[in-house]
Length: 496
Ligand code: FAD
Image (cartoon, rainbow, N blue to C red; front, side):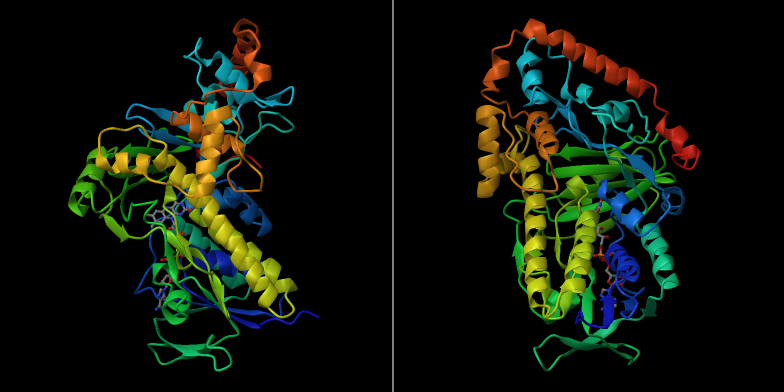
């Protein structure tokens, strides 16, 4: 029989708190009781709108109907992220949720593309991804079944509506919600973990396991248990963001846009009823007022909300699970939203918790495994984000020059060197970002390999050009035939 805690207390009702509550209510055995405490007075971070395809798996596991979800969260579809001005000021590329071209005779497609590129510069890599072509044309459809040109898709969503939706879901399944501000944390005698929480109202809430979803405060894991925060500021110097909503776009793109500025970058996220905009920046290089003015100057239309200024530091706690406290969401770590990974990291933490909690006899083995897993997840995402900053050739600011010249984590340095030397993408383990993602950024930001696969290098360009052209044309025709993203949304999403 599994021995495990019975009373689970979740601290915080942001996206992390309600995703945890909903998933645990669905996936844990019914003998577990779940209570969530949140404070309206404190509120949530109020940002977090772009996702990656894994969210569909989370929703499916919870039995959430996709059309109902799209309606409830005012979501739009997402096939890619567009990077503007990363690399050089004039560069522009897509990172789609798909591969490019497939493989030919066991050799990755990009070797063929690189072979022809010099003589055929007008055909960029995006032409070999159906998802990228559809995104460029403002179109959307779920991927064709059994096609080698399949892709994933995700959503842009209103995160507070998503939290509200999951709250209703969780409460229907027995999660109790307590409104109130936690005033003190009472330690557990046996090991210094947490025994109970006291609210301002005087109410005392006891638990066996505490899930810390208290946001940047990290009330239990950081403040109470003192688990150290490992800062990655030396690799990811941006430490502020300002977010402002503007009106909805008449033709909402099926991609997130990330535009580099001289001191960081801006996001533009199309929702059905509004557009989410934000600027991420290094506060040593630009003041809050200047960043805010830059963002307002770049909006498509008038601002529709007051600026939401957020301070942060890139990094993660040394352990996410300590004693009987598990941090999920911002309380465990933060990486800027360049690749929309925070909600994914919440999802992974919840699933791993379910896996290890359910099977754990003593708790210790599961705890260690959870901590190793989460550290690995954070580090993989971290390195991929650093890649975007490091691979730039911008000469317009010290900020970009410093990023280009900084020393990066050893594993990342090795990956970059390998690609530069031979166009090979290192991928030994199951990281979140698969080779096509690395390829999109390497080539999109101008890392030109010195050599390609010798089997392809020997082939005459003339013999490759025809088949490549045919493929690009085929994908373009297929993309042209897809419905407009706007029309799909007007119908309430993809038909069931
Ligand atoms: P919060 O939303 O801060 O929630 C904390 C909760 O804890 C609140 O309910 C609060 O009331 C409660 N609380 C705290 N202290 C107490 C107390 N003493 N007593 C009672 N309750 C308490 N993620 C993505 O996936 N995609 C994105 O595009 C994206 N963009 C982002 C942009 C920025 C600038 C930032 C900073 C983050 C972004 N994120 C994004 C991350 C995303 O916002 C968060 O991961 C997500 O919202 C989860 O936040 P949270 O629930 O951990 O914390």
